[in-house]
Length: 467
Image (cartoon, rainbow, N blue to C red):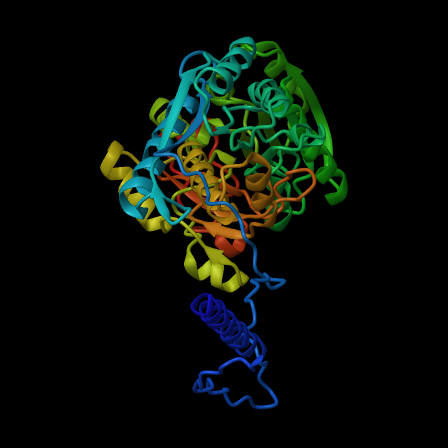
């Protein structure tokens, strides 16, 4: 009994000791382990106490644009009258296009766009000098061939058929072969013209006569009733009135006419001092022969278009001596880097000498205004693409509006709204001693005018128009 009591008492003591220990550990302050504090960086008043987040904000002159989509080639499409009424001019123009492609791809190294150099390729069709075929072929170039840009065809009548197609699809259309003022009066947004307008084309002939012979005042006009020559004659009439000339004969003939006998019989009666014809190659050649056959002389005879083609002299021989003609460009006119520097603008493309040598090497003949005109259009298109750094039609058209540049062909500058050419200057040439000589304007003339021209009888006897 006593032993049991001691066991009970001992158990109670043990329990009390356990409870006291638990109370101690639950009521004492927590144990802290010493740590080394982290160092605090030194901050100057001009520095933030935390690292800023960098935010990239473009400056006003900086643009973030997607990379330019650059194809492996840039395809340029056009038609040419390689057969039909305007085949001579079309064939000559094609040679110029081939020369331009060679220069761009092999000499210049391709169009510089998007950090690359991209070659060009031309896609062309024979429009056979037919308006209806022009329309369908330009539709094909756009919708089937998927060309990047368009160039025009030759002669205003055909250009007037092609331009609305380009406008319909919003395609840049570089008009190198249609000079009618009406082309750029249609409100087209994508047509860019490189030639001097028809109204300013033949009119300088009267300025030339005024400087040579103030007594020569009687002018006869005989012209083809097409879009181009109609506007040419409007310009001649306007200039004649300004300078005090008298129009003593003014008759047109239908397209396709090659027998001018009835008109020339009438013209001979009025005995003009100056005869001005409005023609292209085939009818210009024919009317010259018939003037010679009928012995109709004048102090000066100016024939549109035809005499600028070398085959004119090959066909006529000495009868071509003294004949005067307007031209958009001739090999002897060296519009080069010095000319550009004088104007304070950029020169682009091959120099006149380089183009001349390259063309001779390729084709074995001198370039004409037609071959030079189409070559120039291609070179200008390359420049506009590079300025735009884009193949977008609106961007390239805007680039053309900004261009003021000289090529081997002369100055290029357009009215931004209409696409009218306001920078280029045409010239007046004359056949002298079997070669073409630039006689007007005086500042770029390569020779003096021969005036009055030899009569047909004198030329048949061997007389040359050599000053």
